Length: 228
Image 1 (cartoon, rainbow, N blue to C red):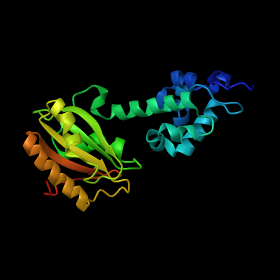
Image 2 (cartoon, rainbow, N blue to C red):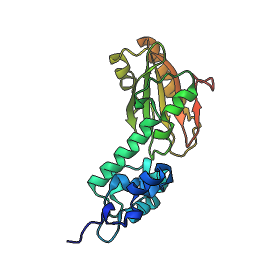
Image 3 (tube, one colour):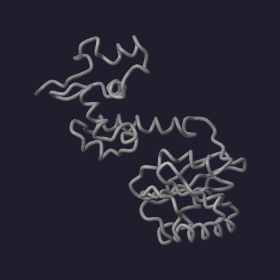
Image 4 (cartoon, rainbow, N blue to C red):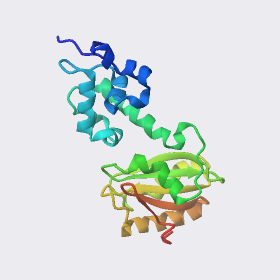
């Protein structure tokens, strides 16, 4: 069996760790930073070449952060161990940009809610409906996936939307879903669902604060549009 090429197999002056300590992390390329995480290449391909290829085939850092396990393992040289490392890296990067980094996150405007989920949802390839639960001070309690696939009234049941809000004693919820096309313009079904959830929330005493539709780097707030 051929040997796997590791970072230590590189000439010393080309090793990312040595370059990091000598010149600082900002001096390293994306491939070199990734190499420090993955650590070993494959038979006939050193770690730097592997990381260059991963970034190219994944579509750069943005593609890397939005790929799933199946997509990673379609790349030559990536099996479960490296796919797990890449998924963990992507999740940490996303959490640094959200309240999950350990800090309290308070929603004061539709933009605050959109910013919380934009990086997670902007590149999804299918529609996902999420809810943000907040307390009486609009502090985020929880973000939860409710459904995946085409968002319509036959799939989005109010029971599923409000179940966790009741369990967590949330004061209010914000509903968010994405449009994979990148265009956040609401459909008639989006509007119908919003009205239905608003009425259900009134009965439960849990206010529907907003329904956000996430596009590619943009969003629409149905509250701001006067629909809610």
